[in-house]
Image (cartoon, rainbow, N blue to C red; front, top):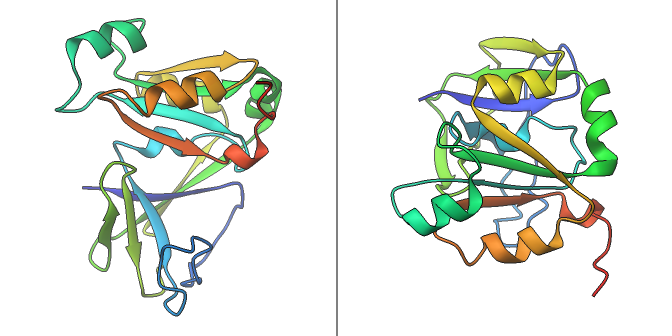
Length: 174
């Protein structure tokens, strides 16, 4: 297993545990967050880019595969708003890899792992072309005017899914 942290910041020397912003987590214990390789595509976007991501898993039905994937060669989709496409083209990302020893699984569906200890990256990969990085991982990229329809649908599917930075999405129009 490989674990990563994606950032727009270059040359991060270490990651210090931070108190989580999520209220469902212990507010007295700082954490360093990482993502597993399977769910890494969910974070290969600019930080505040709202996105709906989904992938097939062991529970995915054939009906959902047909409904949500446009190609049998892709089993992962990242949906962003049209207005973010240029920002994605212009963004450079840094993919920090961690030694997995001190991490534990927090959320299997989302691929989140956390550590309560300071972490020093074992590697850093610069990503200058986000679209190419996603394509290299056989991820389909879709752009929509609004994310809310797919946001609502995919939660009731048999897919693994993640909704990120939805507070920055264009507001619902319904």
